Image 1: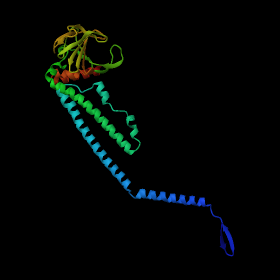
Image 2 (image 1 turned 180 degrees about the horizontal axis):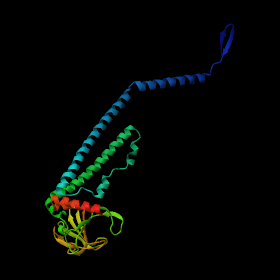
Image 3 (image 1 turned 180 degrees about the vertical axis):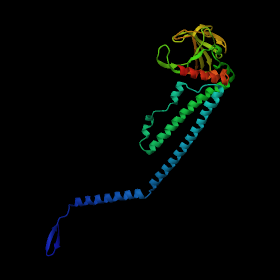
Image 4 (image 1 turned 60 degrees about the horizontal axis):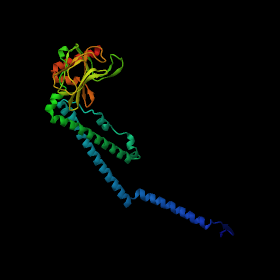
Length: 316
C-alpha cells in the first residue's frame, strides 16, 4: 500500500490487485488491436483483399460475358423458331409443333429449383443465369424436334403433298351449312359445354364422303358418339376422321387415294341431323380443319366460307 503526502499529512492510496491490472491492460490492448484491424481492413488494401477483389472483378466480367453469349444464343434461336413457324411450316402447309410430351419438356421449371441460390446478390445473379440457361436448353430441344419434323416433310415433300388433308370431304355444292365449328361449344344433345374437335358439315343423307388425302384406313367401325366412323392414317403425323356415316365403303387396312369415295353422310351415333363430323389430327392432337379447306379453294371462295361461318356463329 502506497502513502501519498497531502500537506503535512499522509493518505493511503488503495491499488487494484495485480491480476486485475493485467486484465485491464489486456482488454485495452485488445480494443486498440480491434480498432487498428478494422481501420486497416477498411482503409488499407491488404495483398489478400486485393487478390480477392481482383478475382471478384474477374468473375463479374466472366459472368457478364456469359450472359451476353446466352442473350445472343436466345436471339439466334428466336430467329430459327420464327423461320420454322412462319416460313418453313406455312410453305409446307403443316401446323406448328404441339406434341404434349414436347411441350411438357418445354415448360419452365418451378422457382423452387433455384431457391438455394437466392441468399444474396451474387446468389440471385447465379440463379438468374441458371434459369436463362435452362430455358435456352429447353428452347433448343423444342426447336430441334420441330426442325427435324420440318426437314422430314421437306425431304418427302412430293409424297407429303399427296397425303396431307387438302380437299373438302364432301361436294361443296351439297353443303347446307357448317353447322358446328371447331372449339368450345354447347353440345346440341347434352346441353353441356365441351370442346368440339372437328367441324360439322350439314348435307343430305347419302352425300358421298371423300378421302381428303392418300392414306391407309386405320379404323372403320362403330364408335360411341361418332356412330359409323372411318379414320385414315395419312402418315407424317396426320390422321383424319369421318363420323356419323350411313355407309362405309372401306375397311381397316385398305389404301385410299385423295378424292376416293369412302362412305356416305348419315345421322348415326350422337347426332341431331344428317351431317359429316370431320376431324384433322396432327400427332394425335386435333387441329382446326377449316385451315385445310383453303388448299382446295380460291381466295374468294375461302373468304365467302369465312363469312358464312361468321354468320352461322352469330345466328346460333
